[in-house]
Image (cartoon, rainbow, N blue to C red; front, side, top):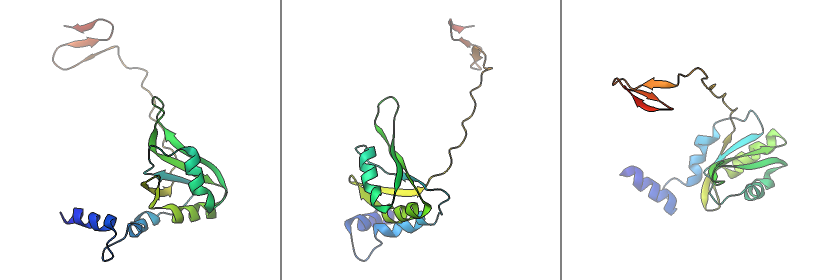
Amino acid sequence: MAFVSTFRRIFAGSNNSLSLSSFSWVRHCSTLSSPKLFVSGLSRLTTNEKLQDAFAPFGELVDARVITDRETGRSKGFGFVTYATMQDAEKAKEGMNAKFLDGWVIFVDPARPREPRRPLQQDQPQSSSTGSGFTTNKTIGWCK
């Protein structure tokens, strides 16, 4: 319950509690290794243009992109911002972390390299056993 009351004080703006910007030190500890930033907590209404407008005052932007779902076209709630220099990216990280954008609090972190995907297994059999004596065959259905 204390956890909930602490958050109520934070978001209510009480002077005797921690402010929202005091949480930024937790995310501020990581250092930049590239000028690309990961932006999380984006509103579903945030577009590439709004993201670019919000981050443009901090330096020369190379790219600002909101990641969208392939099927629905809706925002997934995160994006990437790339600057020309590391100094501009550092200024943007400090200036935009834990700030409001389109009514939502966003967090700015260094982007990590994309992890390699697991290769698809080509040698899977057409039928599989469930352990109950029945075998699933994709073309026929259930077989005994």
